[in-house]
Structure formats: structure tokens, C-alpha cells
Length: 417
Ligand SMILES: Cc1cc2nc3c(=O)[nH]c(=O)nc-3n(C[C@H](O)[C@H](O)[C@H](O)COP(=O)(O)OP(=O)(O)OC[C@H]3O[C@@H](n4cnc5c(N)ncnc54)[C@H](O)[C@@H]3O)c2cc1C
Image (tube, rainbow, N blue to C red; front, top):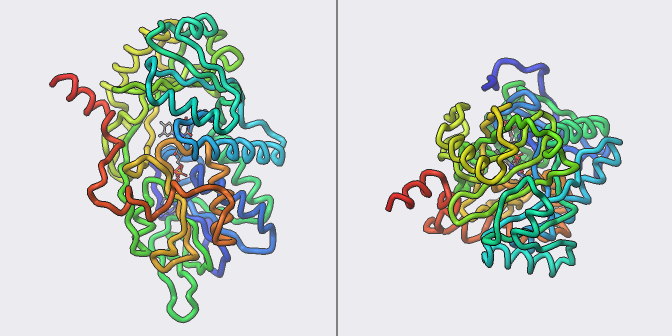
């Protein structure tokens, strides 16, 4: 893990109109949309405690799934806007970030999750194909499934090159005049009583700001604490396995889509070969609860064993030595829905926040756009009602933590009962 302190490349001072705290996927998206919206007319600053492109948070990898299909309509709606946002960024950068290799959702036959996803797709007028397990097998012989499962194909889904998307957002923000400083940790934020400006103390110096956007991922509560706000968040250490299959032709995006396989116990997901010669396969939300600063980067053996078992059974041709096993953090509210809001209810309307729920990368650009709306206008045309900072899941201390019910630990314990 890289050290956040003592290595500033520049000294900071002066006043900024907008300061973004945290330049992972969502923070870099926000910097882009702020700069795109305000251009050179406002001073915009992004602060990142580690070096840009670091692997200590939630956003750094070769690829992330993008899909329109969701079992909740609010996300299906947002996913359309997300895709449009990626295309705007691609157009401006003159560089392709999204590969529409298709996205698959697999579930047990008759699963309520599938029913809800189909309903949301119909309501949003999405194109999709709904196949039985054996029809699906014929279409994609890389999978070995039977009719106990069913599949939904979203032809517009695919993958986004996460590392490049972050770098592109930052580059375009800088091109439009924003300042982005890495190896610069925000230690303290205080509102000055006379001017109402925020004074931000960092490892590289002090600045003042009119408006702040907190996109600090697993460190969100440390930043929010400056405003007297605490969000119940579970942070887990997840991991992905890249299998160096000998059958590379079968697992390139031209032939192999991204997929999620939602189970009542462990759920898995995977992506085709992209950026590294390996098929990416992982358990969703199976990892142990950790804190951002006290986590290991050591892959969990049981997680790898469970994934190996799954791959050998359902994707035998994908199996091979590991090209890479990489750990990463999920940061999740108890209902796994995002937080996208202002801190107006806490007396800070000029501070906005976004926390993903372990599935936010596909929305990184559009969330940056929404945060720009909130920060510049105090409102957005995007439907973000589900993501309120003031919802019951965040305010009721007895709200159940839905994130942990399908962790490897919980599933193992259940199987022993
Ligand atoms: C293994 C894995 C697989 C995933 N797969 C998918 C997928 O396929 N599709 C999908 O949509 N989503 C996926 N996700 C989820 C998605 O990647 C995250 O929801 C998203 O990237 C979170 O972005 P973020 O900007 O909120 O957090 P981060 O990327 O962690 O960024 C927060 C940043 O804030 C910085 N920061 C924090 N505090 C301070 C401070 N005080 N001063 C300065 N800087 C600070 C941190 O250093 C960090 O860089 C996956 C996540 C993981 C871990």
C-alpha cells in the first residue's frame, strides 16, 4: 500500500470554487463533469491521498462490468444514462472505453431476481433475450449449464476499461482547466464562521472552497465526520481471479460476454479477456469485513478454492493457472444502494457525497454528472430518490445489513447447520 503522506508533488494554497475529495472512479468522473460543465470559469480541484491509479480502493482494475439489466428499475433507468455518459466521454477523448460484448444474467429457473429484472427491462423498453439453460448453452458453449437455470441476454452490456476510464476522466478534466493533485490527503475540513467557506487542511497545504464533493469510497466516513455525518457502511475485501486459459479464442470479448450468476448462496460474475491474458471470475460480495486502513492485500485461500471449483464445473475451458489474483474493496450501505445526495439536512447544502454499493463503476461517469448537478444547481433531473442520504436504511440503526448474508463465511456457516 502506498504512503499518503510526506510525498506531495506540489504545495497547495488559495481558493477553489469546487474541491473533490477522492479521485477514484466516481471522483475522477466528477472532476470531468465539473470541468465540462463549468469550463475555465471556475477553479476546480481534485485531491487524491494516494498516487492516481493506485490499487488501495475500489476502482482500479483492467475491466468492470457495464450492463443495462438490473432487478430494480431505478438502476435500469440510471444504467441507460450511464451508457450515454460513457459515450460522451469516449467521443471527447476520441478513445473507446466500453466494449459492448454483451451481458448475461443467469439465475436458478423461476428466481424472483430474474422476474424482477425482466419486469424492469420491459418497463424501460430494453432489448433483451430470455433463454432456457440449454438454449443458452448452445449459444455460448463456454458455459456448462442445464435447464435448472435461465439466462437473460442484454446485447448492449459489456465491459468498461476501468483503469483507462479513470485516467481519461482526469486527463479531460485537466484539459478543461481542473487541477488534480495526488499524494495529497485531506486531513480536516472546517467551515469558517464569518465567510462560510470551507477550509481544507491537506498533507500538501491548506485551501479554501465554496463547495465540496466527497467521493472518498471506503474512507467516506472519515471525510464525512468533518460535517458531523456518519453513514453505516460495510467494507469488505473482495478479490478477482484471472485464469490464464489455454483457450484464449473462446474467451475474447468477440465470443464471450460479461455475466453475473445470482445464487441464493454464493453469487459469481465474470468478464472476458481484456487488458491481461486471463478470464476474470470472482465471487460477488463474498469477502470478509475490513476497514480501509486495516486490510490485507493477501488473497483469501477459501475464496480462490470456491472460485476454482465453480470454474472447473461451469467453465472448464476457462480454467488455467492464475495470471493474477487481485484484492479490492467494496463499500456498501446496508441495503447496497448508493448514496448520492447533498448534506443539506446536516446544514451543509454546499457539500455533496456519493458512495457506491460495490457495483458503482458502471455508473462512475453518470454519477459524476449527477454530483455536478447537485453541486452546481442543488438538484438533478436524474432520479436519485433511491440514493437518499436520509433513507431508513441509513437512519434506522436496526436496519438489517443485507450485505453480509451471502458472504463466504455466512454461506459456509449456513451449510454446516
Ligand atoms: C473486485 C471488485 C469488482 C467490482 N466489479 C464491478 C463491476 O464489474 N461493475 C461495477 O459497476 N462495479 C464493480 N465494482 C464496484 C466499483 O468498482 C466501485 O463501486 C467503484 O469503483 C467505487 O468507486 P469510488 O470512487 O467510490 O471509490 P474508490 O475508487 O475507492 O475511490 C475513493 C478514493 O478516495 C480517496 N480518498 C479517500 N479519502 C481521502 C482523503 N481524505 N483525501 C484524499 N483522497 C481520499 C481514496 O484514496 C480513493 O482513491 C467492483 C468492485 C470491486 C472491489
